[in-house]
Image 1 (tube, rainbow, N blue to C red):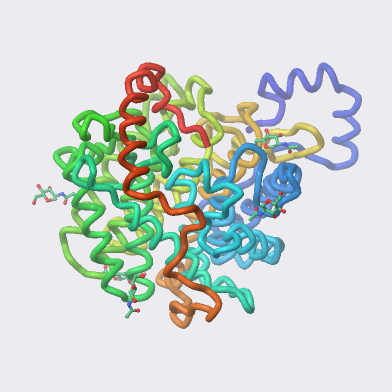
Image 2 (image 1 turned 90 degrees about the horizontal axis):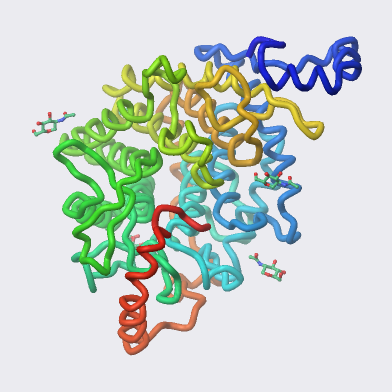
Length: 469
Ligand SMILES: *[C@@H]1O[C@H](CO)[C@@H](O)[C@H](O)[C@H]1NC(C)=O
Ligand SMILES: *[C@@H]1O[C@H](CO)[C@@H](O)[C@H](O)[C@H]1NC(C)=O
Ligand SMILES: *[C@@H]1O[C@H](CO)[C@@H](O)[C@H](O)[C@H]1NC(C)=O
Ligand SMILES: *[C@@H]1O[C@H](CO)[C@@H](O)[C@H](O)[C@H]1NC(C)=O
Ligand SMILES: *[C@@H]1O[C@H](CO)[C@@H](O)[C@H](O)[C@H]1NC(C)=O
């Protein structure tokens, strides 16, 4: 932003006039991050700058003292590691690699499956899935393996294996549910991020290991999604969720970028691995919808057509901590699509570059001794006052997406670790990945009825619009 033009800087000058002057004299300038979206060095510097406060939030939020476990959420750290590993790969910035590596491995838990019994009672499939995507990102980028531990690929594969074992044909002809246990609200719901996330994980494992099992599952999950109300192929609209207790005839239509992004990247991996034109068509159809919907151009609201915005919550500042992340991941996922389906590059590039420039202008916040705080609205000329790990992470994702596209060796962005195939430790037993006592068929039937009984009241409360963890 332009220094001095915002309400924030005005109030700061009023309350802290003297201190501000002092800051100026010391040469400390609270201002935009200068980002030249076509310049790799500029993007790398911006990424480092944005990582600074994000890391402070990360360390301060581990209030339970457990590596990789943030207060009130479990998956967000995994998703942040996914972003940081991708950024490291395209920038070489390795300042936090050892902690990222340690904490990413730590949360794999006692059975190395990202389903540790500390958390498994209340996790959703999407929570576990994000750690799986972090692990396959580590595989693809050649993030150093940890000695005497399973490979990153093994961890990604454990998540895949557990989740496909949860494929649920008791309603809707299939799909995986949002929540894993019958006692959780949302147990019968089938949502796009869980199914799309597993689809993407399968496609990436398939391309990385060249094992047909993963491709077969990716086909199956796509086919089911496109036959359900989740993906409407006539206009490529992606719904957020559909209700299993209603046999998936309805759709929760809140529009979130990550639901698109996860399917887009998965389809792009499938195209790149198989060369089948149907996957290019699907990638492009979904991408066109995302680019049209989440890059609005209504100038009266401050939009210019090239800045990513999760429009369902940003304008009203109603994004919860999950939603604040979405466009960061989605930026990287559409960058992957542009790399893996090169014909899409010209469409994606201007949108990601416009977003990078906007990130530079909006990450000029300052509070509690932290500078270069990013906000939730990239399209706004200055920080919008929202702060935290999530918004820093989203901004880092937006910067990283640009670096992925500018990287000369584009192919390496996706797959540079061909030697790290599936190496399981002898001690690691993939056949029994489930730390929970197995739910018997009897339990399942009983709980199914319980869930049906709950259904009406829960839906009436509108719980399904908001993701809890
Ligand atoms: C599980 O909780 C215990 C007790 O708080 C803690 O010591 C351990 O590190 C936790 N494990 C994981 C994977 O979070
Ligand atoms: C392919 O992956 C599946 C699922 O993880 C596994 O069961 C199978 O053993 C793998 N096949 C090979 C040849 O590695
Ligand atoms: C995808 O294929 C359909 C059917 O052939 C066609 O109508 C549509 O234009 C294609 N979409 C894209 C984005 O290529
Ligand atoms: C923890 O994270 C939340 C959300 O990012 C943030 O608002 C809060 O300030 C953080 N707490 C600390 C102590 O950093
Ligand atoms: C797969 O991706 C690479 C870049 O990583 C690209 O060079 C190649 O053309 C892509 N393959 C197809 C079939 O588009």
